[in-house]
Length: 240
Image (tube, rainbow, N blue to C red; front, side):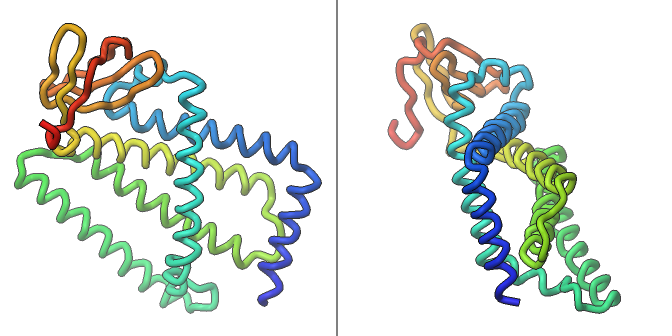
């Protein structure tokens, strides 16, 4: 059994070596698409039209962050979370799989009900954000299962399955981008004082800063887009 992962890794290395140009180009394109999806999810929380001010060079920079995120994500799964899937081992009985699935679904459902109740008590309903969190959990579990299947598989997956996995990954990244957007929008500690050339924005949130434009979420729940040259200074509350 120990020879299976080693053999699969060797085949993957051999394939990459013999098709380095194709693999490199495919990886680069996937990184750009991933960054675009993450950015779309993030900016969509504020205004969907903001995606059009993101330049290609910005996507390249974001893709580097996404690559690091995915590297850490898959390492974390492989190192710490793969053991969770023993609850759904292929050798387990159908009854035990159903029971374990029901327990897991119940725990997740209870967690989200508690979150919705806390939102209700606070007077700030965040239903869309909670739906995004539920979707992220579902996609996370799906990726977890898929990684486990790839670890135990003795054959290279068919291309249609690879495209399906990439699709799930891209939707997961879009959802993660949206969650990061909600975090940026709703976290009080991220509010700052922004000094423009003609006015001062108090309790604003920096959404995006590119070489050409700066995007802020103001205290009156408006999205402000200004040329980057108009920004004089941004001060966090802790520095005031």
